[in-house]
Structures are given as C-alpha cells and as structure tokens.
Length: 128
Image (cartoon, rainbow, N blue to C red; front, side):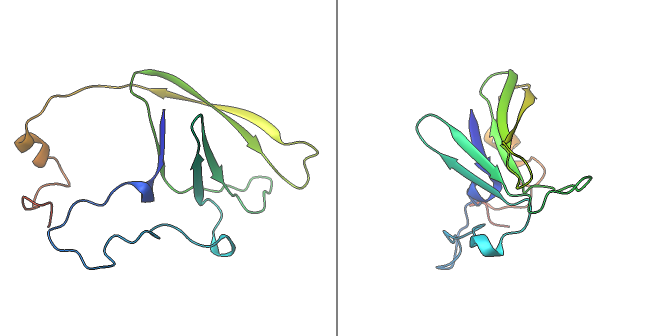
C-alpha cells in the first residue's frame, strides 16, 4: 500500500526553475496555523499514519480533508482502521474504512502519454 499527500507528489519537470521553485516547505505550516481538514502523514518501516485534525467536532458538522492519495498494486479491497479522539469521548472511537481498488494496466507510447489532457501544450521538458 502507498499513501501520499498531494504536496508530496513531485512537480512536473521545468526547463528553468528559480532557486525557490521547489520549496521543501511546500504544503507545510506550523500547527497553530493549520485549518480543520489538513492532512498529516507519518510512516515507519511497518505502517502509515494519516492524521486529519477536524478541529471542534460538533453534531452534523462536516469537515473536508485535504487531498491525499492511496495506491495499491493489485485490485481488491483495502481496510483502513482508524480512531476518533475527542474531549467528550471516554475512549477513542474505532472505525474501519474500506476502499475498493480496481487496477487496470495500459501500455502506451511516449507520444500517447504526452497527448493526454493536461500534458498537451508542454514542450519536451514539461514546460508550458
């Protein structure tokens, strides 16, 4: 399994980039400036931890998280075990989120890849 936050994906290559073009702080803010829904991802040799701070939990309140990506090399279900922590819960509340993944493999030439939407209009170095 692979878990990646959107800010961890590499920027497309550019022919000319300024010294601050690929900032290592991209997508990072101090804890006191974070908004509800911001995603933090930690990992070690055995597991990933995705943490979404929802701020104050209230009945009926919805908090939309930042985008993050989950990858799987083969089709099938993936169970994600989670915990909800809140001041008014005597114990953390457990939950399981099941993600169904369908993997399809496609062979394409470099020209076919470059003609995909979003890539059209870029030069040979990926610059627009």
